[in-house]
Length: 502
Image (tube, rainbow, N blue to C red; front, side, top):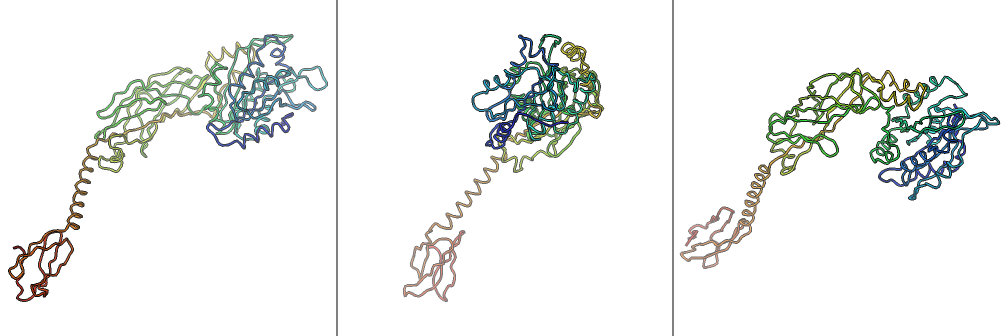
C-alpha cells in the first residue's frame, strides 16, 4: 500500500518540527491530521450549491485545534501513478489567531478528483489514507487523525464495498497504533447529477496512548460538541469503560457515611472508632458504550484499598439487554478494610487530628462473557443516512472482545478527634515544664545558711558547684556541694565546727 503524502513538502516538516520543539505547557500541544475525501462518490458534496461539507470541515478544524498544535489538512481518494493520495492542502502550526482564513482558502479550490488523464472520477481507499496519515504525516508519533467520508470504500471501483469496509475496520480494530476510534454519523442531504447522499461520517482516531489522552481531554472540553452535536459511536476500545456506576442509595453503617464528590468519585467518611465499616449501596449500572447493547454479561465487583483486595457482594451477577444510555439497578454490600485503618494513637492519627486521613482506592466492576450487539436505533439511523450500505454489520465488535471493566475511584477518609492530639500536647507541655524546672534549678543561684565555728554565714551556690569553706584563720575546713536536690558538706576537717543551717 502506498504511503505517499504528496504536496506537504517542507511545510509538513516545519509544522511537525514546530510541535516537537514546542515548550512544555498544559495542556500539551496536539498533532492533528484532517483527511477530506474528494473521490467520485463524494461529488454531490462538492457540486450541490447547498452543500455544507466544506463548512463542516472548517468548523471542526477550528473547534478542535488550539494555539501550539500542529495542523495538516489533506484531500484523499486513491493513490495512482501521477495522482498521489493523500495530498496536503495546508500544513502549519496553529497560532494565537485561529487559522480560519488559511483553512477556508485551502478548502475553497478543492473539487471532486478525476483519475489522471481521464474523465473518470477517482476511486476511494480509506485504509490507504489513514495509514499514510499515521505512518507519514505523524511519522508514527502520537496525535489525532480525522477522516471526513461518505463511507464508500471502493478502491479500483471495486463493487465489493462490504469486503473493503471490513478491511478498513480490520485496520481500526487490530491496528496497534490506534488506541481510540470514534465515529460521528451526520445527516447532510446533497444531490447533484447522477449521485446523491443523505449523510456522511466523521471519524477520529487517537494514535498511541498520548493521543488517546489528548482526545479524552478534547471531548471533556466540549469544544467539538459545539460543532458536532451527535453522540460519538465508539469503535475502539470496547474492553473498558463500557458501564458506569452511579450510587443511588446508601445504607450507612454506624460511623460510616458515603457521598459522591464533584468529579464523580465515591467518598467514604469513617469515624476513627468505627469497628465494622460496612455499607449496603444501591447502584445504577449504566451502559456507556454507544451504540452497542450489552445483550448479556456476567458481573463481578471488587474493592481495592489500602493494599487489600476484597470482593463486593452483588445482588445479581448478570446483565441482560442493556441498551446504550440505559441503566439497571444493582444492589451491593461492601466491607472497608478496618484492619488497615490507622490507630487513634498512630503517627497518621496525630498528623490528621482535626481533619482526615485519606486512603485512595477504587471499586472495579468486571464484565466477563460479554456479548455486544449493535443497537436497533443505531442500525435504523445508519440505514437512513447510508441506504443500501452494509456498514452497520461491520460495526459488530471483534470476537476477542469478550470482557470489559469499569473503575470508580474511592477515597476513604478516616476522621480523628482532637483527644489524642490534646493528650499528646498536655504530655509535651508537662515534659517541657519539667525540663524548664530542671534547667532553672541547674542555673539558679541559691542561698545556703551555714554555721562555721558558731558564726552564722550565708553562701551562694548552684547545682553542680563545689564551694570551699574557710574558718576565721583562713584555713579550709570543708566543701559545700550543691545538687539539684539539695546541699551537702564534704571533706570535713577533723575537729572542724561546720554545719548546715544557723
